[in-house]
Length: 84
Image 1: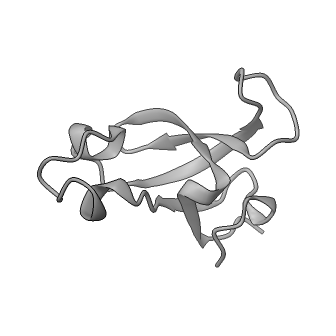
Image 2: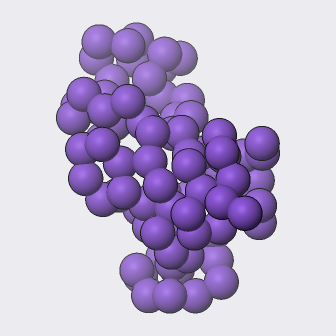
């Protein structure tokens, strides 16, 4: 289990690990996607993306979360179960 982008691959189960929620705003005031949507932050990686949303070998990933699709950077998530 690692939060480094190279270890992420399609099919992995991930959890968002954004620092904003508790450190800067407090749990109830956080403006991030996961907090405002009431998400658990658990999702499944779909594919690797670049910053423009086009398939490319960068650190951006498309994932499906309990509240819908979202694009995350590899360091914003940790793998909780690998797709083997």
